[in-house]
Length: 74
Image (cartoon, rainbow, N blue to C red; front, top):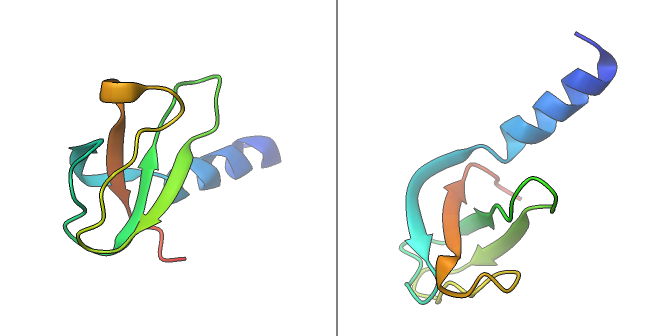
């Protein structure tokens, strides 16, 4: 595996989705970092929410915004 491929895999592993999916307007069940994947041509959007905070809309996606819980600790 090349150095570039290893770096890419490390980035993908860091942002790997885990847990349930949330829509804009729902409340965060726990304090955590959540990520919204905007597609292949855009960088993912990351947000840190405290328990009970509302998930925002991301990147003009409106109602199609989906947030994923991640394993990112910082």
